Every structure is written in structure tokens, then in C-alpha cells.
Image (cartoon, rainbow, N blue to C red; front, side, top):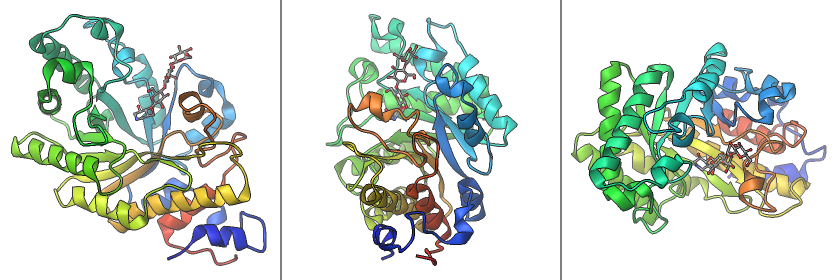
Length: 359
Ligand code: G3I
């Protein structure tokens, strides 16, 4: 087994000792040359410092770097329907226009989730019927408004607990598990109204290796299929911690389980965070590089129907991690000064299968 960490540590040169042909590599170019639709990234724009950071934007908008952008927040419920039946498409339009200008796809994210819901929903008094109508109206408006400017929609996000039961949310608590099937049914109806090809995904974390939650996700796919409700793919978020990323074999097995059901997969939110500083030691970055390598190579090994790899933020400078997990960070493939890290080159080697030849 090719061990990135050892090569990095034992290299007689600096830690950026990599195959020379890859040192100038661009990850989306490599991904699309090797059967993927994209190497992409989430972006928390507009309305944040990123929107005016020229160095950040130079990397983000280069189609050689990224062939897909996922809006980290701007298409979520609280931003798109801030008041009942009043829709705000400004943030989503911004991301879509930026992506389209640079020939990038957009994974639109997300329609139904337990977080970042508008106050009028969470503070409302709902019956199953009235909240179902709210959900239907939201889904119909967003899907028909943006049409196939969205390559795909994460229709339902993170609906499962680690033990495979359904997670609590206003949707589940008010409507019951039926909300999941209704959400996909409404999305399917809205897609049909557009007459366009828009992929419908279930998206979750903790389903990157075999286990109870992954089995529950398989069952969700099977139930949707049994009801003849459209589901085209499953997003494996792939939020990992340095040193505790599932093995390549485990990640391949989990992906194959979904592919065997006839749905596509994608790595949708890849990052590998340090649970404590320091984040930039040679040993730590070598392990992190190995972790990135293992996840990406699992997508390569299962073939084209692992459609693409998206990192969730590409840089430590604006990463979501520190504000979500105090003391944790260094999760991304560019550092805080927007320089490529060993993980970047590890991804290049995972995509191309070109081992390091100058170490
Ligand atoms: O918009 C406000 C802004 O007005 C305010 O000044 C600022 C400071 O308080 O907060 C801004 O809102 C933040 C928002 O991101 C937009 O930047 C929220 O506080 C912050 O909690 C929110 O975090 C997002 C998180 O989802 C919410 O759970 C992250 O950016 C986003 O990357 C993250 O993404 C999720 C995926 O959607 C689903 N999978 C997990 C992933 C990580 O949690």
C-alpha cells in the first residue's frame, strides 16, 4: 500500500518532494482528465470577507482548480425564504453567476435540514399538514427558480443519527419520517415541472465506511426506490479528523454499497481537521496528506459513478472548522496564507495514481 506519510517524512528533500509533473498540477484539471466531473469546493460567499479577498478569489475562480462550487450557506432555508413565501435568491444567484462565468457546476445545497431554518418556521405552531405545505412550497420555489443551473440538489441533509435512527428536527418531530420521502417527492415533481435534468441527492456524514448509519442510508435509498421516488445520488460528506480517517478499503466498501443500489456517489464536504494545534508540523501534515489521499483514492477506485470530490472550504484562512470546533483547525488543502499544503499534492497523486518519483 502506497504510504504517503512515510514518503513525506523520509523524503531527503523538503516536505514538498513530489513527482515533478504534479508540482504544477491543478486538481480540477487532473480530476476531469481522470474520469471525474469535478474537483470542487464549498464557498461561503457572498457576505463574508472572502467576497473581497483577491488572493482567495483568484484561487476559487480558476477552473483549473475547481470545476464545481457548493454554496456553503446562501441556498439554505433561512437565507432563501426569510419570511413565509417571500423568497430571496440573491446569494444563490451570486454563487451561480460566479460558477457559470468560470464554467463550473454547482451542487445546490440544501432544501431540508435541521439547521439554518428561518425563525418563522422554528417558532411557528404547525400541524403535519401545514408544515408539509411549507416544505412543499419551499422546495417547489427553489428547484423551479434555479432549474438546471443546479447540477444537483441536496434534497435532505443529515437526517440520520449515528445509530441509524432518524434525527430530530422540526420536520421529523412534526411530520414524522414521512418528511424525507415527501421532500424527495416534492423535489421530483418540481424537477419534472422544469423539464430539466437535475440530480437529487441525499447528503450526510458518517456514512463513509460500513456501519449502522451507512446501512440506514442504504435503507433510505431502497425505500425511495421502492416508492418510485427519484433519488440519483448520495453525498458522503467526509468530514474527518487527522489520524482517524476510515481506511481506503472501508471507504471503497461504503461507496460500492450505494453504487450497487444504482445511485451515484460523490465526496461532498471533504476536510480533515486537527483536533488541536499545532496544525503545521511535518508529521501532522504527512498524516493529514495520507488521510486526504485515502479518501480521494477511494473515489477513484470505484469508478466514474463517484462523480466528483468537493472539499468543504479549500483554505485554513476562512475554514468553518475553528468557529464550529474551538481549538480545532488546519483542516484544508491550502494554509492560512493560501499556500498549497502536502494534502494538496496527495490529492493530485491519488487522482492520477502517479506515485512520488523524486522522494
Ligand atoms: O450570516 C451570519 C452573519 O450575519 C454574522 O455576522 C456571522 C457571525 O455571527 O454569522 C453568520 O452566520 C454564520 C453562517 O455560517 C454564515 O457564515 C453562522 O454563524 C455559522 O454558524 C454558519 O456556519 C455554517 C454551518 O454549516 C452551520 O451549521 C458553515 O459556514 C457551513 O460551512 C456549515 O456547512 C455544513 C453543511 O451545510 C452541511 N454539512 C455540515 C457542514 C459543516 O457544519
